[in-house]
Length: 74
Image 1 (cartoon, rainbow, N blue to C red):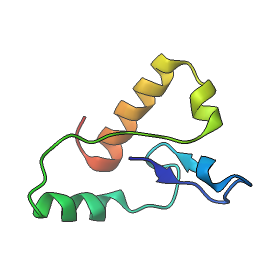
Image 2: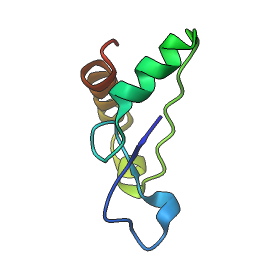
Image 3: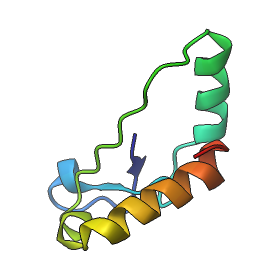
Image 4: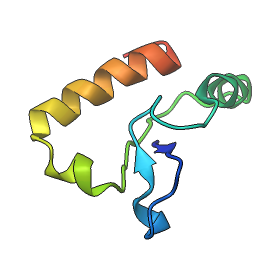
């Protein structure tokens, strides 16, 4: 999971951010996926040079906090 950040950078592949940084409605998407019966793992994969350059422990803390606030559980 990652968010789609606007405006897009020149390299659109790198236009991703942490949950809540962009424009994706994760509440509605998560509700639909759960209603379909999915209860498996969720992968976070953020293509963004600023995220890659951040200290790993800060990135992990941000992912946990955002997942809890945007999706509703840690």
